[in-house]
Image (cartoon, rainbow over all chains, first blue to last red; front, top):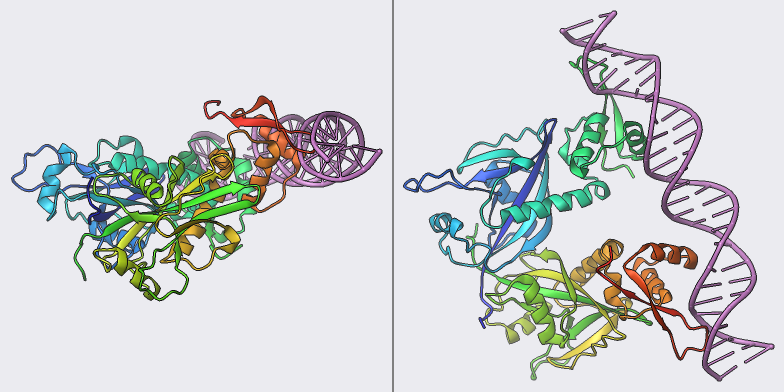
Length: 233
Length: 233
DNA sequence: ACAAAAGTGTTGGAGATACACCCATGA
DNA sequence: TCATGGGTGTATCTCCAACACTTTTGT
């Protein structure tokens, strides 16, 4: 039986991005040390150790910014992952040894999920520290550590909280059409919705307000634009 | 800016217990060192540091058992608490110094909520390491560290998940009446429910099955007993 | 017989679902 | 004028809320 000892704590951010193509997740490539064998580098969620004097939410914002240049997005804690062997897998050892002082130290991580509008936020993050990619959810392959598990849990949480928490608007441009909002719901909830009924429901949401503005440059009847007003009711 | 350093990780368990008197939470008294000034000892949630080679869920079960003799209850992680100052408050320093090797070390904690039936589980825990008490939710005073916050969050989570997660049955005896089930719902959700409508809804839950058994020893019409069958649908 | 909680159906209203056509724009 | 998605109302059904009396036991 081992003593209670110190360990490392990290945050990992599962950032979902949405545009008309669908729902994507932000992944970074591990920078493989130059001399490394060049199988393609492994992908992982943006995450890193927390600093000694910062809070968890703060750490998540900092780490995401440092690794991807994205700043100030909605990020919410959803679960801690503490399997004692979660960073012990063979496939992950080389990379850990190249970046950590104590590569064998146990690491517990706190998962955050984040939401971004790819359209007007356009966080095409400066490639830095490897590479940063938006990957379609369906195209996500094997990730480092237990990051596939973390991603799956984050997506589950997103589904659960989409309706109750007003978070859909984080994924949309500031000005959006009802069709965009509906498409987002359909993707996340993975079911088709009826247009008229959907709009009836949106009319009841007092925090979704119509703007005096319409879509332009489309080759069909331009849609009314709406925006999200968190203040309202 | 400080370096990423090791820190301590703990688990804290918010164990709710239910009987006909209502909903209670399990608290322990901090063992004050003998020479200590004897203001009444401070109460806290059962919690302790995790060991180096155990998972989080496992740690929660172990810690709860060590501190309260309770074993094998439903425990579910709900949130990590990582404010860098959460164990730095003056009121908590004396106790930390008496029990920890590194009393100044930052501690991040993972919160678990648990559910127990006080009736047939009857976990009147052996008094050990101070004292163990079931305290009515309304009577909970100031707790050590940020434990009031943790308790509040746990109760919020319980409310949210009571209906969706089949967890009400953890709080009831193995054999229960529909009136008991309804009373539990009324306490947790803090609203009165209609008896007939409630029973209509329960009839739809295929995992609540009637037994060939009735209440005995009551001075009124004895109620049908039911039990929870997790297997069913 | 009485007290005390168990058990049981019906009705009305609100909210959800299903469904099809005309409209404004750019090409 | 045509193609494309935007925008709108009604009928039905399901689900939820409200409501009161009879039954069984112990004393």
